[in-house]
Image 1 (tube, rainbow, N blue to C red):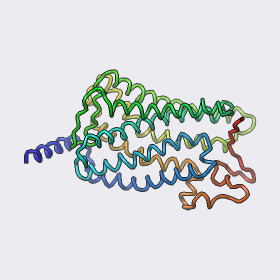
Image 2 (cartoon, rainbow, N blue to C red):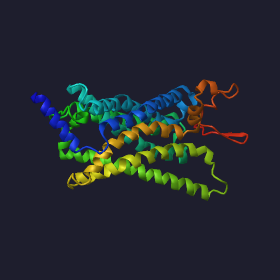
Image 3 (spheres, rainbow, N blue to C red):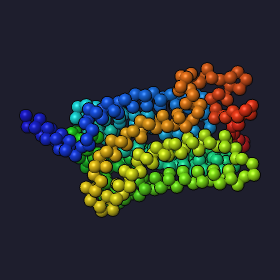
Length: 341
């Protein structure tokens, strides 16, 4: 009886600082987006991995990683969150589950953030400096190595601070994600590292290089005597800018508020916004597959017609229907990247 009263008190305390949308409403709101989002993610990965031209295109590699990691979040973090909304408690009272939940939510979120930041930088190389990646050695150093470093850092850093922290985490099974038990951030050094590297540097890179990409494309188009071959580059620009825009709209205001709190401002400042921001952050994951598919005309068309990739292939040019080719009149413009042996 005492445990039941304590549990009720904890839930009431949680509700007193909760958002206006009831948990049942949040459950159905997230579920409505979750199912089609997972289907869309699987659809995108299928075509990215099965279509040879999509798979080999360098500009798709970072987005394959982003969609794949985001799918893990959709299959682990969001279902557990839905279960919490339904039962008002963690579905299994176990430290291992809490650690896994926090790792997927915190660790994969940071990894996606860093990948988006790198994508904004790499897109400049692919569009304006593709001579830097004409040999296998250049591709490994400039394209593959940064991607590997980000993945190793994202998974490794969070593996250490979440699974093997130098302190004792405290779990609260009446709170979502067990109360986010990250005792490591009680350390000022660790907290500053997280804020500066993950919450400030990554968004600044995304904003700066996304805006710079727009400016460079416009200036390049105006400075050329003949019109810029926009069909060759627009897919890469649209693909990046659409995902960057989604990321900035949903996450950046929340990150700025976290930075303000880390500077010593009372956490009561913007407390309601933080609560809503934590909930709305899920829609960044849920909308990402649709934005990614919509930014690629080939995938958007396949989604509308639900035609498998192999049925779209032509007998004479088997890869062009699945490639990033753009047909203008009778001429097909593609963005080849030649690799010197």
